[in-house]
Image (cartoon, rainbow, N blue to C red):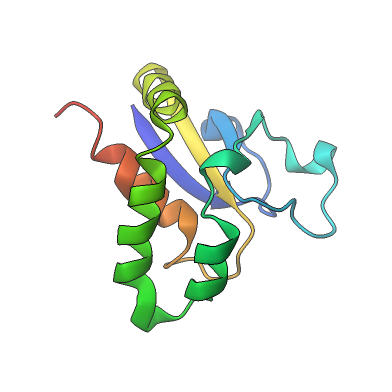
Length: 118
């Protein structure tokens, strides 16, 4: 069971397993066919207000995660579904940001992995 993270613009691979777009907005210039996503879960992406406040400012990363995790706490059913999918195989969380280290998919993976049995 595993959660992977990948830019949605990168080539889809069989090893990706279930490909889940976790951004609120559709990625610019990318067709649905090229994206090769299995699910688009915009409801578990950060709220517009949180995304705007954060602005990929490294100084706000820890506070962003804390606020985002509180938002995710209100989506138990969707989170449970993702955890169940990860128990069955690989789930790749797709994001569009050019920032690869501090983005919502990285935070979401941390949140999801904290819900996996040890």
